[in-house]
Length: 352
Ligand SMILES: Cc1cc2nc3c(=O)[nH]c(=O)nc-3n(C[C@H](O)[C@H](O)[C@H](O)COP(=O)(O)O)c2cc1C
Image (cartoon, rainbow, N blue to C red; front, side, top):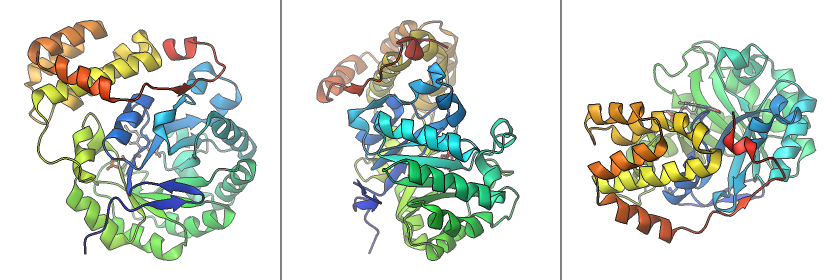
C-alpha cells in the first residue's frame, strides 16, 4: 500500500495535518511563500533561519521575521546561533510571537554562519549542540526540533552519532538533509542515512533533500520510515509541484494561472516587506515562476530589468491578460490575512 501523504502526525503536542513539509530557505521562506505553501498542501511550514544574536539585540530587520499570520499555522520558526543562553532567549521571543515550534539550525553550511560556531559546525561539537537544545527546550513550552546535515565532511555520519543525544537533550523531532556541509547542494541526498536515523530515535524524523515529485515523496516515506518529507528547491516559484506531491493537482498550470499566482505572490510580498525591499527580493522569483519552459527566456530577462513592481505587473498582464480575472478570483477566495502584528516600528517591513 502506498504511504498516505495526508495522514496526520504530530511533533510533541503539535498536530500536523499532512506529511509534506515546506523547507526553511533563507531569502525565500517569507510569509507569502509559507502562506502559499499551506494553500497548496504543505502540512507544516517553516521560516527561514533567524539569527538569535539579531533577535537578542532587537535588530529591527531580524525582528521582522517574527511576523506570523494566523493562516500559517502550524509553523516552525528556525533560529541559529552558538550560545545556549542567547538561543534560549531567542526561542522565548519566537514562542511569544506565536510560533508552534522552535526549530534549531544545525545544518547551515555557509561560511558566514559556520565560522561563528553555528549551523553545521555544531554537528562536530555534540556537547555544545546538546546544551543548546537543552537550554532552548527548557526555555519554551512549545516543542523544539532540530534540522541537520549529515556532517561537515563528505561521507560523515555525525548526524547519526549526535541525533539520539539531541533527542535526549529535548528535541521532539529531527530533520535530516543527508548531504555533508562541504557538498553544499552537489551530489544527491543519501536517504539510506535517513532510514538509519529513523531506526535510532523514537521521535518523528523529517527527510529533506531531492524530493521533487509525488513518486519520489512516496518512495522516501516508504524506504526510510520517516514521518514526513520536506520540499525545498522544487517549490521555489512552483507551488504546483507542492500541489502535485500533495495529490491535489495533476498537470501543468495554464499561463494565466502562473501569472495570477505570481501577481498574488508579488502583492503579498509588497505588503509584507514594503515595495523597496520587495523589488529586489522578487527578481529571483520571476525566473522561477516563468521557467520550466513556461515563458520564453527573454521575457524573464526583461522583467528583471524593470525598476518597479508595478511595471512588472503591467508587463505580466500584457503577456497574459486573462490572469487578472484569475488573480481576482484567487484573492476573493482567500481569508483576509490577519497578522499577529508585534509592537514594532513599521520600518522593519519597509526598510533595510
Ligand atoms: C536558497 C536556500 C536557502 C536555504 N536556507 C535554509 C535555512 O535557512 N535553514 C535550513 O535549515 N535549511 C536551509 N536550506 C536547506 C533546505 O531547507 C533543504 O534542506 C535543502 O534545500 C534540501 O532540500 P531540497 O532538495 O528539497 O531543496 C536552504 C536551501 C536553499 C536552496
